[in-house]
Length: 142
Image: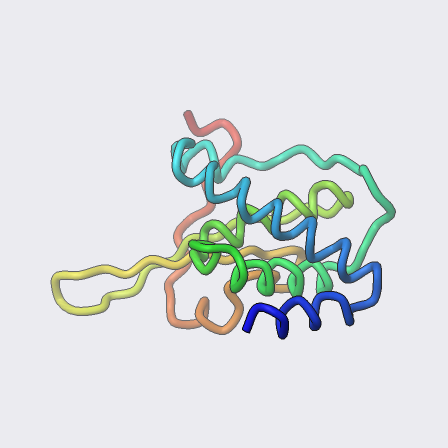
């Protein structure tokens, strides 16, 4: 049962294996951030750090979404958005976590987070259409 995912991983090109391994680590770190860091701090812009050659945001999206299915609690939309933002920042790409809300019933609101890089949705694509985006906090918000 465990051999099939392992075979798939081994069958990936080396660059994709490295990217997916990096995404798994980023998703785990993001889960810890969600647990211990206030949301207002999470939403602040992150500095760009170029640790590697610029990559393709679409490949980052693939890696984070795949890692989100592998890591326990990685399916959480905010966790995936944080992980994707961190991976993009390391490669010199600016991105923004967006939060949205939708009415599930007269008394219940639902929330969703997604990550935007330019005009592309990196994580949470598809679902974001069902949510009204909340205003983006400025960097000066305490």
